[in-house]
Image (tube, rainbow, N blue to C red):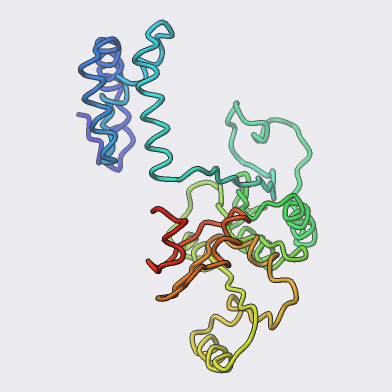
Length: 281
């Protein structure tokens, strides 16, 4: 019996259920009322079930049904912008090892392919990261084949630490997604502990600097809370930021917010007089 919440593959990958879902979508591919109902539900951002997704996919498949296709595409754009905004987040792939014990025929790395096997040294990982940073990337998708002997979890964790520690001028890797085979709870714990999610650059100085340094040390985050001191040109730091926060209660203009916006950095501001004149929501 089909059970979408089961942890057993044979329960939720059910051939008969897949055929039912596809048949339902095909049956309603030209049903404008059903498509409108599904799109209205999708607009509320609550998610769709498999039958509703099938209807939309089949409706899009019919290239002659331009009205329904445009409705679906228009709603897809609206939902994308509501969730992600008007931007695309890109990850640069970094292949650290092509050792693999599996025989997946679609993959060029499979164990019977006959290719020369290699895994990067930490020096090579750092070199690749600098090249990626030089291209403007800050996010990496770290890739590796499945081979617990030649590419174990400790090697992956070491590669992550090397990537986070490698800098190219003001460039640095801020986010790593790891694409490896399913592993154990203990190994996932190691990956989580290695995944430093942020670095905070404190540019400038002032009367509370020592207090901030002490607070960072007490929280054991001095390795990611970095004091840069006074900088004649702060814009490289601003340009490389993932987010700009402007917490002022009173602000007549907010020039620094305009500078962040000009550099393409997402801004979060308090509802003060100045920023309200040029930030709508």
